[in-house]
Amino acid sequence: MKCKICGQNSGKYIVCQEHRNTKYKDICKIHGNAWFINRQCQKCKELKNALYLISDNKDRFGNVIDKNHFLYTYKNRLTHLTRRYQAKYMKRISGTSGIYGIFHNNTCLYVGQSINITNRIKQHKENFKTAKYHLNGLRLHKKRISISKIPHKVEYKYYEMARAYNAYELSYKTLFVVSRLSDDFEYNELLTYAEQAMIESYKPKYNHIAARPTRKENLNYK
Ligand SMILES: [Zn+2]
Ligand SMILES: [Zn+2]
Image 1 (cartoon, rainbow, N blue to C red):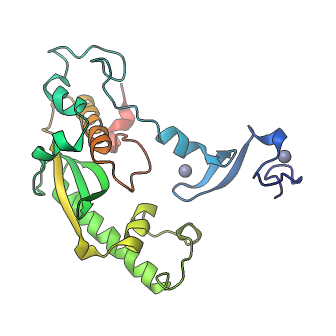
Image 2: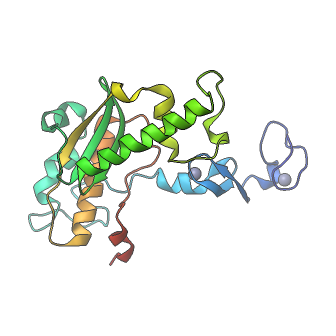
């Protein structure tokens, strides 16, 4: 191979020895154009870090979760990170806010957060359909063309799921009901802790990144 940066022979590596820690631009299958170091997309690397976990009875900032802490009421569910413990809280889909899961039989495919789960699932179904039509149009089901080589109409994960499953084989569940908190920052934090807890418990196949706040309001972090 030729080094991505200097063009010299780099053997079986994407960059030569000298450029092992040098940033270069490449295409990430999830992020598109991105910075890479030694084959790894730096955005993916940052996003794989699970930040929203309780450890030693402390939140992600190191504050102790005592009974005045907004996570206190949820502590049990946020720290018993096994599917066995969490499964009894599974409910059918409704318009509540919280965490949902997409399943194929017993396999969890995807876990996400939403302020209205019913609406979010509708979006998922539409995106899944779009990916399916797109893949069928390209006749990818006959040839195994890399999904990363086609321009995406919806997020990467929908293509992965659409290639592996049919819409009627998927089921949707509410995993964790999160009630609205008056403080917007705390509410978003709680949703994200709950999402990470469900990712740890259900081990979804297509969550490529750790839980992060998804709503716009989060840009105004205190
Ligand atoms: Zn080089
Ligand atoms: Zn990436």
